[in-house]
Length: 232
Ligand SMILES: *Cc1c(COP(=O)(O)O)cnc(C)c1O
Image (cartoon, rainbow, N blue to C red; front, side):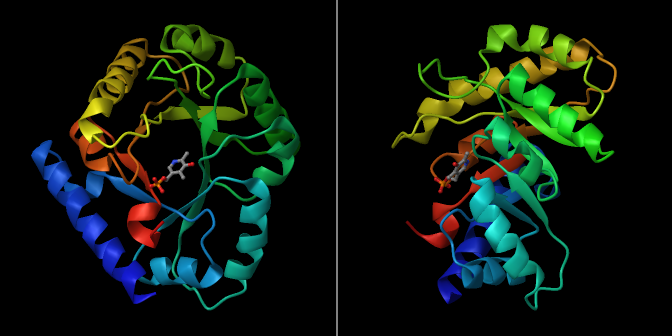
């Protein structure tokens, strides 16, 4: 557990350095501590170390942990984000748990999120997941379809698009993912110039344990980090 706190401090420091290199303040980059497969004690430790966003991949796992963490001694405020693929039949149980869903990758999913949000009189904040590496079989909207996707989504009032998420390749050399991250940043800039109503592109969620520093240099302001904090 001591290792988790130390790793968290180290990651936080490297995030700050990368932010400075890209001419931004360290506070402009938010860290999502990815706790899939991590125990309750591990989550409590990272919260005590100062994490304020917890990222989970699966609704079921998050739900079990949510109850335990909420009834534990943790007192500081923090949010839960859903970062993994979301199936439509899990939307209903996901909505009460997460303040941001990073992984919206189809209109059918977006419609279901809107419909279920309407049912509980809520507007749900989402990111669109983009496939920036061109790998087939990978989740994510292809970049060429993003403008169309957003235009169609404007008719669903109970979701609010706050930005984009992408995953680089699982590569040993982080620099290989630079073009993918750059692509997402450019896409965001292009969408911003369209001035769509109710779309505010605040977040670029990109960068994981192996490539978060490169992602920050390319404009990430939300990084999702698991292994570098919790070990393998
Ligand atoms: C697991 C996961 C992460 C974190 O990956 P690490 O390599 O452990 O940092 C980030 N994003 C998503 C979508 C993930 O599934």
